[in-house]
Length: 113
Image 1 (cartoon, rainbow, N blue to C red):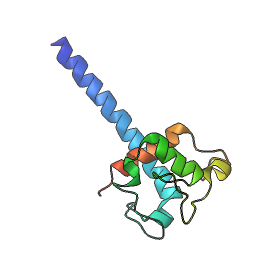
Image 2: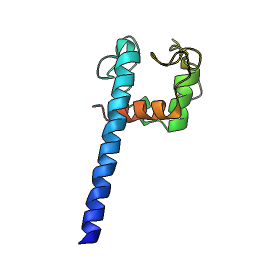
Image 3: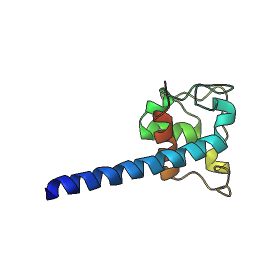
């Protein structure tokens, strides 16, 4: 019986942490990305992110965010703001942290394709 309680507690803890990551990623997305990529990451001025670049490896997703280089190693035709120079809104010009980028990617992965 202790194993069941421990397992249930672990699952609730993991679920809560994942929810926090998605919520944080959603906030980052809404404030910084939705104007170009659409409210549900389905594309607008910028390309669709849901189900596409969201599924890149973290290293490639980070490179795209910070250096405007896609999964094929090519520069974006239309560059995004350089987060490494300007930071997310509210970050006072600091580059996004790996946690912020991971949370954003977690949110995008949860969006409908």
